[in-house]
Length: 108
Image (cartoon, rainbow, N blue to C red; front, side, top):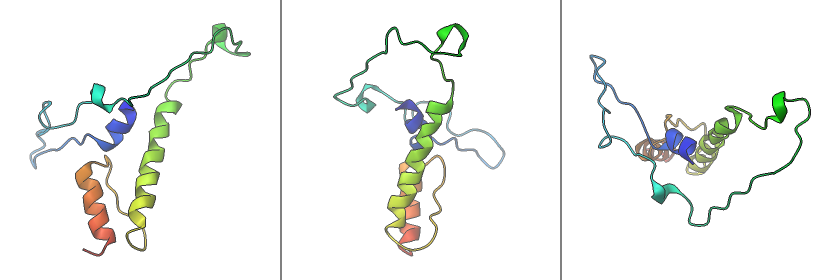
């Protein structure tokens, strides 16, 4: 969920001179307990062998985090339903960026 919020909830803004405008929690959305689904169930696989890995490691690194990019594709497909042609959705896909893309798709 945190990675999805990084893709859709936070945008670093800069002034023309390069100074960062988003410098504190008042200027971006911090993931909180309210972002966690009410029914979140986690189970771990115990005693499952992992052949061909160092020490039986189940670590996979960053690839699962990149699954959040599917959210961008879903947003683009949804916005595309408002009009025709390609969707110009900025990343991070904040609420404002989504609104701009919907308005552009509608021809406005």
